[in-house]
Amino acid sequence: MSDQQYQNLLCKQIKLLNLDLDQQVISQLLAYHALLVKWNRTYNLTAIRDPLKMISRHLIDSLSILSFIDAINCKTIVDVGSGPGLPGIILAICRPQMAVTSIDSNGKKTRFQNQVKIELGLPNLTVIRGRAEDCSAEPFDAVISRAFASIADMLKWTEQLCAKDGVFLAMKGIVSAEEISQLPEGYALIASHVLDVPNADGARYLMEIRRG
Image (cartoon, rainbow, N blue to C red; front, side, top):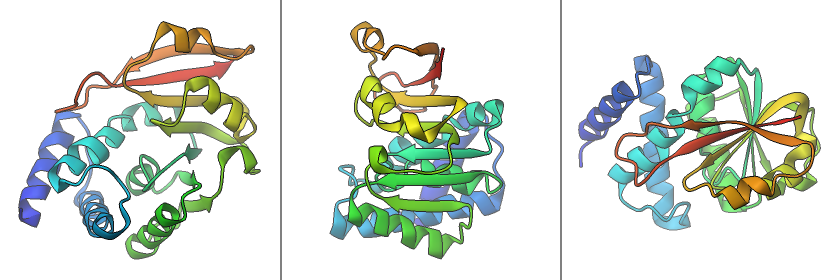
C-alpha cells in the first residue's frame, strides 16, 4: 500500500467526520501512522497489524471526539492508559494550543510516544510512564480514556487528576446499564454521545461524567 493511498483513506474519512484539518496536521497524522506501523512490527504496540485498519480503528476513532473536545473548550487534558498515544497524541497533533498529557504503565509504549514527540515536534505533549492512580499532577480540565478498564475503575484511579469542575470522558463500545449503575457516589453520567466513526465495528460512544 502506498503513502498516497493511506493519505487518500485518511482524508476521505476525515471528511466524513466533518473535520477541517490543514495539510500540516494531515502530514503529522500520517507521520504518526508510519511510526506506529514501523514500531508495531517489533514492539507489538497494538493488536491491529493491518496499516489500513490502523487508520480507521485508531486514527479516525480518536479523531471522532475532536469536535466534542473543542466544544467543552478544555485547555488541559490527560489521556490515561494511553497505549501508543491514542487518543492523546492525535489530540496533541490536531490542537497544538492544548496541553496534552498521556499516562501508560508500559515502558515500550511510552518510549514510542516519546519518540513520536521528538520526531513530530510536539512541545504540547507530556508523556508519563506509570499508573494513573500513582500520578500526582496539577488537576486537568478533562480526563479521557479509550478502552481503559470499567468506568467505575477509571473514576477511582483518576479522581485526583480531574479538576473539581472538570469532566471525565470514557470512549466505549458497549456500555451496559449495570456498568452505569456502578458509578461511585458523587458522580453522574451527564451524556452518552454517539460517535459516528466511519467503518467502525459496532457502535462507539463518548461517556461524559462529572462530579454531581
